[in-house]
Amino acid sequence: MTTSEPGFALPPGFDPLAEHGRVLESVLTALERVEEQLTEALAFDDAFSQTATRHLAAAGGKRVRPVLTVLASLLGDPGLTTGEVGEVGPQVRQAAVVMELTHLATLYHDDVMDEAPVRRGAPAAHRLWGNSQAILAGDLIFARASRFMSELGPRPVGVQAETFERLVQGQLWETRGPAEDEDPLEHYYRVLGGKTGSLISAAGVLGAFLGGADESAVQVMADYGEKVGLAFQLADDLIDLTSTADELGKTPGTDLRERVPTLSTILVGRAAAGEGPEAEEARRVLALVEGPLDTDEQLAAAVAALTAHPAFAEARVLTRRWAEDAQAALTPLPDSVVKDALAAFADYVVARTA
Image 1 (cartoon, rainbow, N blue to C red):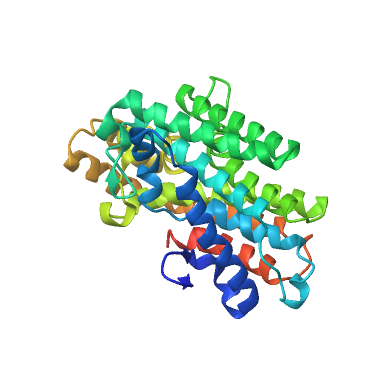
Image 2 (cartoon, rainbow, N blue to C red; image 1 turned 90 degrees about the vertical axis):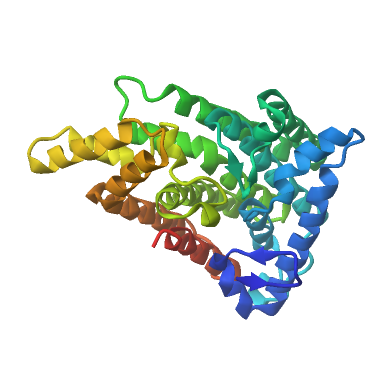
């Protein structure tokens, strides 16, 4: 990982920044300050409110959304072509904080809905304080994020409002499932676009806009963020089936146990609808996936069968395709270290599943 002082590390996908010292310094300095501001943003007079809302922030995380906000802001820096970029401005840093606050709030709600016991290696908030207080803690974080966004002007407020709407719709679509006449795969992509793509896209849009980039660059970041967001979530779904609890910071196979559709299970379902030996094998896997998963042994058997099926390899290919689409979305941008870093990050997203 690329690091500065102890306290913040960039995801490996941004390693091209290491060759451009001034750009790297500007990014890391901003992100160190964002990390400080994130803690400050969750300061409340009420002791429980502060403890509950800081619970997941203190547990760590990749901070992908703040990183993208800060990096996208440099697209508007006049010194980018020479590598002599300036300091990332306070509005960009504040937007980066809002992006992470919004993400954190969704995790509180997701964990209640999924009944997840662990998040980021720590007990999920609802396990510590119950469902109602976990949901309210998430709501409180949303409220604080909205308050900070209101200080950034009408367009950022509009971006946040639209993103919040899409986040909720994505969760609603996932909860209800596809309509009878709807393709399950297209429905799944729509869910991910709402739940993950929307916020990562917003991070890129706000960074570029508040950093002074022209409108064409803002739109590039909207498209890139949406696509790399889908690739990121698709990759996470694959990792959920192939990693240990220590590596994940949560229980592996959670989506299977909670009956949440993923790309792999959707593709197995498609294969099972056919005829012949391949369809019969797919139906055998589907029986394990859809059968009882109450014990660790049952879950392990379902995970093993699913990851051994060709659908899992196909899911890898489709995940890679979304990352390539994200890279293609960067084409209109002039060549720069920021463009290289964004392209490399899309590679990193899917390399995690290898």
